[in-house]
Image 1: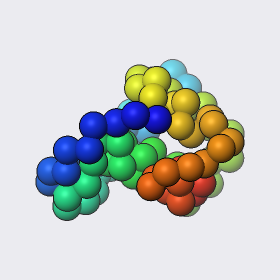
Image 2 (image 1 turned 45 degrees about the vertical axis):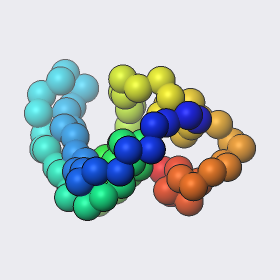
Image 3 (image 1 turned 90 degrees about the vertical axis):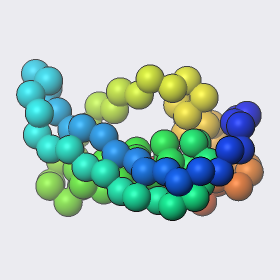
Image 4 (image 1 turned 90 degrees about the horizontal axis):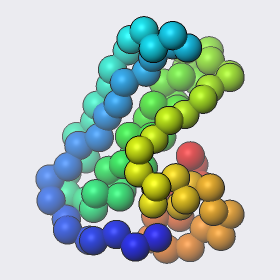
Amino acid sequence: METQQNFKHADSGGVICDGTRNWILGYNRFLGKCSVAVAKFWGILDGLLLLQKQGYDDVTFHYDNLEIVIAISDRNFEGSNSTLIKRI
């Protein structure tokens, strides 16, 4: 995965909706200085952990960044984000 490594103050977050797109909850986290890719990975991981804590075990995940989706789907975890991707 190629990402531009601009390290700026970042946060991550998302919205969790039910199957009919009704809002369940929103979340965010301040990350400090990190790349855009790392912020996106944290947003995904935090959302999945919240769903797990709420007792959801059947989840469909929609994401609009192809590079991030490919990185998560790829089983060859290489690079600086590999530990974070493995947790997802």
